[in-house]
Image (tube, rainbow over all chains, first blue to last red; front, side, top):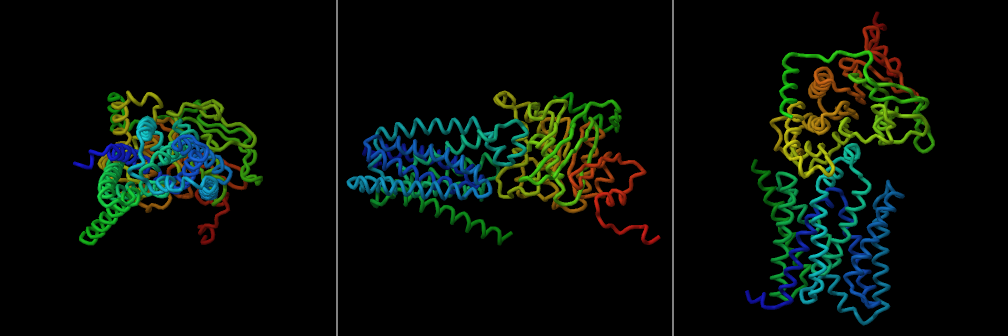
Length: 269
Length: 270
């Protein structure tokens, strides 16, 4: 276990595992609510927050959290205006976020290499303060998920009936989008802005193939995500490749294997 | 809770039937209600009253605002003008969610990949706000009773995606029943299921109405079933609602005529 003699690897593992649990648990609801693109859009905005932080000299992580949270509220607002074309809201936010990021990056020419780590994730770049922010905000997100579990289930399953059981559907939806924004912003440190939504979607997709209940769906998704992150970090360290890409490829490989086994079984029965 | 269950079973066994009470309380009341979609009026000057113990079927041609009417009754839509009262309260201020059970059209359009068991789905109908931390036992008993009533007790641990259409409708019914509501609102609950399952579903509703005393308000396009089972028939047509008592004088043909359906009339043969 010589890998753990490096401080930065210890931090990468702590940050990575928290990220995995968080993003995959959110991912189950995100996929079932057909919000996969929301994660993607928000991650692009988070990136512009990072760039703003670097340009104006504040902690980039705070920039990512704040920009993503604002974008989440904006998405909810314009989703109401374009209720029949919800994807318009996402396209606007996604391209707007990317555009802002590119402009901010070109303004501060010197930090390109550091920004690369936010795009694709990095092992060595996880600082002690990153770990502190990831664990604090991460705990808050998981607590919110646990407390709002019933509301989120009802709203996801049948929104009208949820409203008539006394749930404040609008507030739950906005809060959930806000949680997605925070989770996405947290995870760009380890997996990178461009790959966050993969870690959100793929474990949920795997678990929906095999889980036998809603609770089990969470357990399997979290398991797949943690497995992908841990093995991805080992491989990334051993072969010196970007962790984000490695993690996503492993998760995708797990999905492929599950689909093949399921298809094979389907033919047998 | 257990006493309630025993009581329920004895009701079924002894065949006790709730008597219609002419002075029964009003469950739903609409006074001169108007509703428009994007400036086009779909309901105009609608007044009606549904009393406790009624079984009202709302029928009408496609696009006649049947579902709109149901959504107005529960407050999911806001009327343009007029007044809507639910259990005597203005529907906009109604908060006694335990009194109403609602089965949306979602039952027919549910995502079959949704990875939840029957028990999890039914249990989600039992929403108790902040009391949730202490309601575990109550919730389990309520779920057990509801799946029993809906006739799906053996399916609790199955995934909803694995059920037949007819079974899935019953899951949604159980979900609507889990809080022991006094009135059930059902929006086209038998869409897309086979005729035998439809018949069974209507029989179930009739049992709930007669033995449990639950008021039933159902939107349906199935005139035959409505005519067989419902005590009152509401025809929604030309922005109006015409409510008839389902007595011997009212024939299926008569209702169809009111709705403007062309039916293979017996009179033609005679």
